[in-house]
Image 1 (cartoon, rainbow, N blue to C red):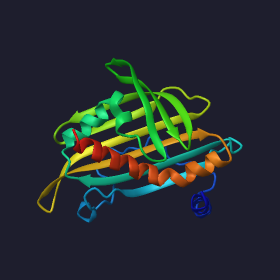
Image 2 (tube, rainbow, N blue to C red):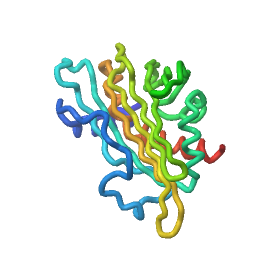
Image 3 (cartoon, rainbow, N blue to C red):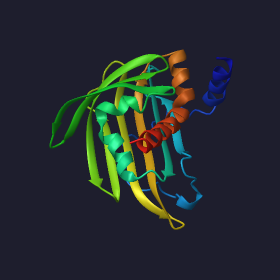
Length: 217
C-alpha cells in the first residue's frame, strides 16, 4: 500500500489541470507518428494518457483517457474472435486493477449489439450498458467501438475502441493492436487516487490479456 500511495503522489503532481480532453477520438488505423519497426512483439506501449477533474463538476467527476498499442504474431482472426465474443470476455479480462466481471448481451440489431457490462476497479463494481459496433474486413482489419448508452451515478461518457490490422514488418507478419478508451467516473478520496494511479497499467494489462486469451483459442 505504501508503494501504491507513493506512485499516486508522483502521478498526481503530473496531472493536467481541469482542462477537458477529447472523447470519442478517431482511432481507426495505425496511430499517427508510429514507426511499427520500433515496436516489440507482445510489448504494449502507452501512446498517451490523461486524467483531469471535469470542468463544472466541483471535482465530483474525474475524466480519464488512455491509448496503447502493440504488435503480436497471434493471428488477427483469433484476436477479433475474443473481442466479438462479448459474453465470454470476463474469462479473458479478469486480472489487474480493472477487470470485466460480467457481460450480458441484451439485443442484437442492425445498429449493433447492446450489452450490459459489470466491471470492477479498485474494489468497486460499476454497471453500464453500451452499444457495441463492428467494422470488419478480415484478415486485413477490424474496428470495434463500445459506447455507453446512458450515464449513471457511477460512470458516464464511456467510449472505447479496439483497432486490429494485419501488418508486415521487416518481412514478418504481425497483428497490430490499438486500444483507446475514455470515461468520466464519480467518486472521491482514495477511489480517485487509485483510478489515477492505475490507468496506464490497466490498459497495458488489457492488451496483454487479449493477446494471451486469443493465443489459447
